[in-house]
Image (tube, rainbow, N blue to C red; front, side):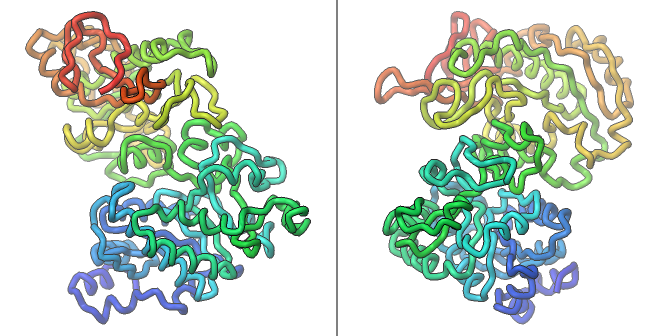
Length: 538
């Protein structure tokens, strides 16, 4: 049972009501499609909004072969109330964010193993995804072309496409199999049950190790086999499949251009450049926690917000045309760190003014698209991540590359939804006409004085679109300028990384919203008495 009445029964803590949502063989089989495939994800209460978006995309595709696991009672009640097909997956873990690498995160991996075993034992062939790995295209036709041989198909953190786009092939296995296998989206045939049971046992024996790494380790037992000379049947080789788990399981790597990581979709933009729809989008390779994932999906118009996000009562918007120094950017291998920071900082001067202006007008700022001369990673690189084919500059550059959306903005300055919208906001198909068609194009103010702001305050347009954004911060009197520095200096994040000058020194550099103010103190209380230059650390 789904709907408000069913949710109320669950809210009354009635055990008989909760028993109706056990994951039984009957429930699993009833949700499989005619080919035995079922789409499954799971969330706790804190991440129910991800389930709403995940299920919304599945429903948009006209698919009914899916279930969402509820990892706590509040999640179960919420999903049932939203009429999302769900099952009780009480985990005993936190109802807050799991946090990558934490104890709860490791325990979550074991619960994932248990869930998958239940699905396989019911004879289902599941596609199991993390809730932030959206299903944007029906994967069943793709998978059926690889049957009956394929038993395990997994996405990858490989950053170089080796597939054949014309035939929608898998990645070339001898190359792509060397990168991390990402089990945030993968397909399992029920015949792979023995290997998955072994994986679960390994997770239980090694509770401090990551289930994703152990997953690949299991299939590497007896070495991976790729060629007919290694005993791989020709039909398997032809389909770009390979053997693992002592040669007993047939495996394939989904194409990274259409089963996308956060890098191949949001940074390299592989499907966009090919002009194809991806099968999935996973928000990996991002730098601002759960909020960074949400913001990236909003930038791509893939996040399904409530109507009030697009038309907030009593609120209006401000946007502007950014001036970007495209002449400063160079191709990969030619762009230096200092020039990258100069190009980005010039954009931040305009953003700084826009933040001040939006606050004075009581409007929500629509961020501009940013341009970045260098990619961002967790390790040293020469402008692009090693092993990738990222074209430079990156435009549009994900906001989390430059802005600290979660810790600097959201946690220290109130809900981000009350301050900002993504750069693509006005192009979102869910934007109502009442906002889309209520737009004015006034001149930009020359200062933040009341006389300059009066015409803007008088406008009843839902959107004020300015042709440029002058440096309004420089017009503030000293006391107001100091208050602005204290408020906004936490808004920026860092770029990573150059090779550290010494083994124990930092290779990252933080962006500085007040880089052009001399003297000034940054968010780490470092004082700059001379013109800003890239400074490693802290």
